[in-house]
Amino acid sequence: MKNLFFFILLTSLFLACTTCPPQDEGKSPRVAASMEQLVNDLEDSQNPEIMVVSHRGDWRNAPENSLQAIKNCINMGVDMVEIDVRESKDGVLVLMHDQTIDRTTTGKGNISDWTYDSLQNLRLVDGLGVPTDHRIPTLEEALKVSKDKILINLDKSYDIFDKCFAIAEQTGTLGQIVIKGAKPRSVVEKEFGQYLDKVYFMPIIRLPDPKADSIIKDYLDHRLPIAFEFTVPSDTIGTIGMFDDIREAGAGVWVNSLWSHHCAGNDDRKAALDPNTYDWFIERNIDMIQTDRPALLLSFLQSKNLHR
Image (tube, rainbow, N blue to C red; front, side, top):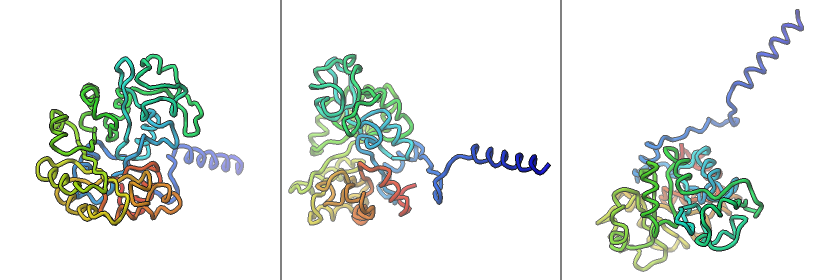
């Protein structure tokens, strides 16, 4: 009877352990934001939390610009994924950062010289250049994976955005898309005006720029953008002092942590050794950070109660 009792007890404990969802010790399970919440956060320049944007997807754990790299970002609770769009020889929009396919695939040459069908015979490679089972995805596939799950920054898309727009409209993802351009308002309105009320547009301001303050003011006065992206190579640049005013005016402030020249030396490589490096962004009232280390940045911000 005693043996039967212990058998039942052990069986119950086993079933309890295998049916409970795993959780990290000392941490609450991550809650995925709804698309409505992500859009609200994007549009609210006074939001006390900081939005995390993952550069080319989660490329440390999957090939850059792959569907898996996007799915990883969704699963870890990233707010926005940045992907790059190029056009094949036969006009299919695919995800690829470089003009050539040499660095990221098993093929060689300009992507514009390859048809879509021929590209599908290639494999994406990982960060060490080792071939994987992943193929080059189309923009349509990427948008379908992202639909209602994550915001999307389409990089390299400005000159082909009419085609990107058509695919976004077809997939029902227009409300999730952010595009950027390093051009003054008057030029953007001339080249891109028909789309400005249908997608989120973000001007890029590469500091130091003697015209930066006037370009910013012109946007704030005549066409308030969702945010401004800044490169900040040095802490001595005076435009940093405008960040508070920009956010109060209703636009967010985006700065990359990718490389040192983007963020006065306070980049992801330094943060990998000391996560408190990211305090630099908090202290300067930056509310959107594009990173190559999304898991590290998320963990840091959550420890500061600056991300859900």
